[in-house]
Image (cartoon, rainbow, N blue to C red):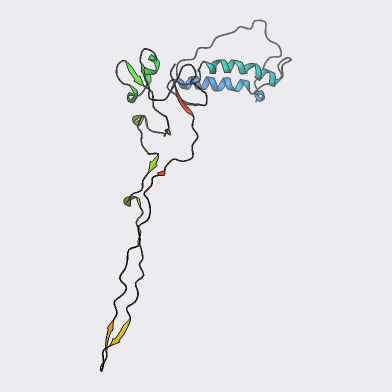
Amino acid sequence: MGYLTPDTIPDNTVCYSIRIPNDYLLVAAFMGAISELFKPENWEVFGELSPDETAAAWLPIYETVAENRGFCMLGSIVAFATSSMPSGVLLCDGQTYNRTDYPALYAILAGTFINDADTFHVPDLRQQFVRGETLANIGSAGGADNVNLSLSNLPTHDHLYAYHTPIPVTIGAGAPVVVYAPPDIPTLTSPTGAGTAFDNRPAYYSLAYGIIAV
């Protein structure tokens, strides 16, 4: 159902500012509500404005809030395709920063990233994939780009060798004696393989990770 609007703007219209508590759930709910206002399907004709025009008029308001990162949580990790990090965003390259430069970020970071009372470092996500974890394990790392398989990595299996069946042979003069020729002696095959490591990474596309710092 579209939003209901009056046919005319009342003479006693007053503008109000809205202050949102610094709670990510409330901020997300507010931004979600605002985002509905620049969708034409949520509007009816308002005076001489069509739903498309009304929705378009709301879009700059939303973009203004978005540019101030009002919808982004402090400490969020975001992927960027820009040539440099936007204002207020730090590249996730493991660099160390002073607490006094980013006090709000310092105050909420997990202990893994706190160096001491005066400095902290950001995650180093260069050439890394991000994996979901529990809060207790934030900052843990693992895996390898390349892998060499060893004997212990091979699945349990058998090799079948085909031996020749012993053949009876009659030897000697007079009363012959039957003996059996021995089977062929098994011979090892020549070794093969070079033990070269293989790429252990799935298909990927590189972007720069940044952390919202202010």
